[in-house]
Length: 281
Image (cartoon, rainbow, N blue to C red; front, side, top):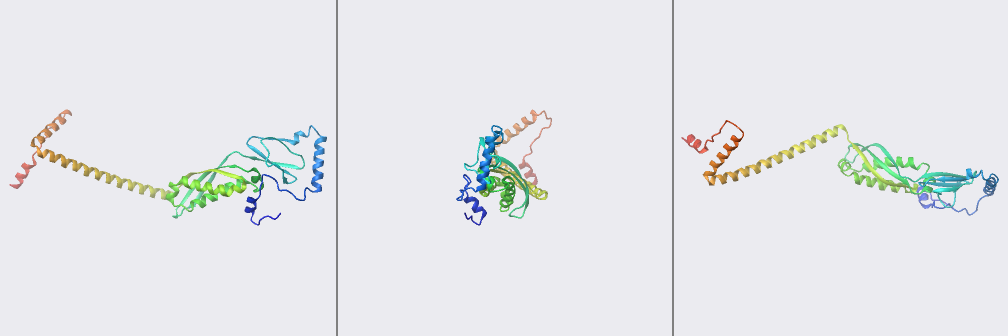
């Protein structure tokens, strides 16, 4: 059988649910070793059961190799399975979801700002056969790939996008990781950005910018309040001007408010018209 030159293409084309068929069949040495192993099992029965019967948990699968080749039937488990000593070897694969922290990565964003970002990745083994046969250590490789993918994804984003679009970045990173680890039999379930740390100088600059923006908004709000108050006072003055007795009532109301506070000071308003007459003279 001739395999493609590209290892990745070969990994995608192979079907690890069943071993490849050997048109020539097992060799003479393989047949002899198999017969001898079965004879030893029969000769040492029932003590050989301790070596032949294995158990895997509900969340585990066993990938069995017989004389270096995958055994028919795919991964075994959960429960009891049978192995032949001397010619069989097996590896247990845990199917539970595993989480790990991506170390903080110093990333240069698209707008040339250096930020430190760390994340957490959740993955599980979806194909035990591929996880054993396609890669030597799928866990370590997934960790290294997650760190590289984090740097690549964040390198295409501006600082504002990194700070505001964490969910989108997590989704893009999860899709990239899942596609890359599919030939390894690994399913990346979730990626979350934990923290984005900015340089101290940049934090101070952003804080000063935010403070200036808040002060500008406060001044605008105060100016709008003064404008509305002046309009209300203008309307009140026009209403009072229509009835001279209204000014006297307002004066009496002011005296009532002053007396309610037990204040001995009484303010007498001086008509502005009187001052105008004196000035004109």
